Length: 256
View (cartoon, rainbow, N blue to C red):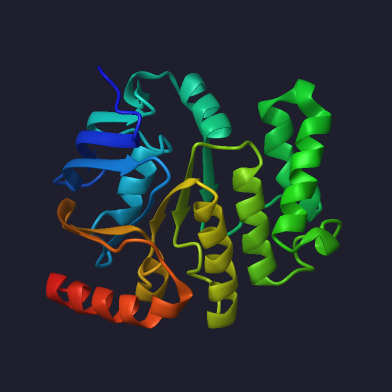
């Protein structure tokens, strides 16, 4: 297959059916989508529309039932579990609603762990990169704290550091502000906006229009189908309210 250098990720006729139910539940229903290099794409839809399933299927965390997913031209659906794990570790970063950190490690070591696992021989480089990330996201002073000794916002910024520790080509975020209050939500979205500005490709699932308004483009899912999309252009602080209002009006038309 020829690969368009401007596209980082694409799916073709992607489906996901869960056969554990009777009758089987089709959660994703033949989705064609592409994510441009350096784009910030948000996936929205009502609860149960298939947003998280789509995110897990395109990121190789879950195998689709049929269809293909290409990352930088490479067909992920043809990889073995071991090969896919390697791609997730070295080419992708993940941020979830919960941080999933190890209790017995401090913040810095939790962030360092995947970087050392990805490139054990490059220990000094990994350490320098992680320390720079801690500095950049304003959490260097809590690097040696345990994970229960920091705020929810600090923990999510640590999740962003961990996701960036292996210099991924794409970052996936599933409701990254879902468990945060409004000031921590802004703190985390500011950090993600910075990551995107520096050129990282970002795909995020959210139900929060204020968070979605930060994206370059929003796509809308209904019953496992991609029904529409909206280009928002580059986000700026000055136009935040207008963008959010325009997005809300569009979402209401979608039945959100």
